Amino acid sequence: MSHSLVTRHLPRPGGDCPYRICGTGPAVVLIPSLGRGSEDFDLLLPTLAGAGLRLILPEPRGIEGAPPLRAGDTLHEMAADIAAIIEAEGAGPAVLAGHAAGNWVARVLAHDRPELTRAVALLAAIVTHEVPAEVRASISGSFHMSLTDEARLAHLRRVYFAPGADAAVWLGGWWPQVAAQQRAAAKLTVDQDWQRVADRHPTLYVGAEADVISPPPARDALRAAIGPKAECVVIADAGHALLPEQPQAVARALAGWIAGLPG
Image (cartoon, rainbow, N blue to C red; front, top):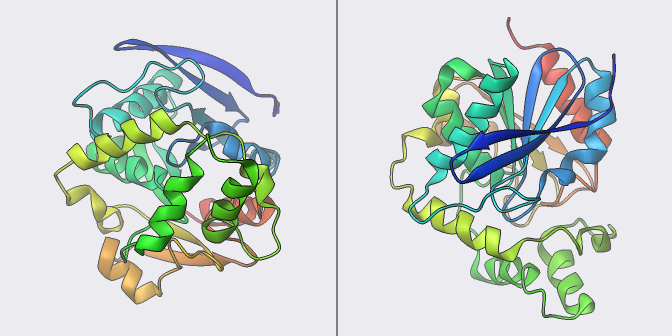
């Protein structure tokens, strides 16, 4: 079994959408957060591929040569790009794993294309509460590339990382224009049926113990928000960034849950 990453390109409206793929076995699609690329998952790949999983990492539009989102695009168009990749790879039904804002796309894809969806994993996702204004301010500050590194580090430490973690690992990898386009697409997505993903699909919420953006919900609250098929696991010593802080713990949680899925 090869764990080496291969980059492929799929023709889509406006240009080719790049994605990376590695491993063999049941497919898992890894969808990054707001204004960030698929590299955020790289530290998870050895553990996940070693668990016998086939990993597909689409690049969001506007990142690494992918065409930008178009005026009027919604989360449904973002999900359609990933659906096309799953179909091109013959990888359905796949587990869809969305980190933070990437959970929007995962849930919309599961709603729009249930035949391509085996289960859904939501990593540090906002599902049960509103984000406080002071937290939103630091999220926005993370994308202000004109700030000094120290000023941006203060924002990163405040809202993304557990106390004592090295927030500097996330100074790079931000795509402000892409984030603005993704926010616009989310705002244009006026339908809400896709939010209750766990009415239909097995769903794992992977929470971060020190997350100030999306504190892990209790299971009853989670199920009330997204459906009865939801389960929750909480990763210690991690904030909203989660992936660079505890990659092995997240990968083990995902792999163990996937191994127990029916079918």
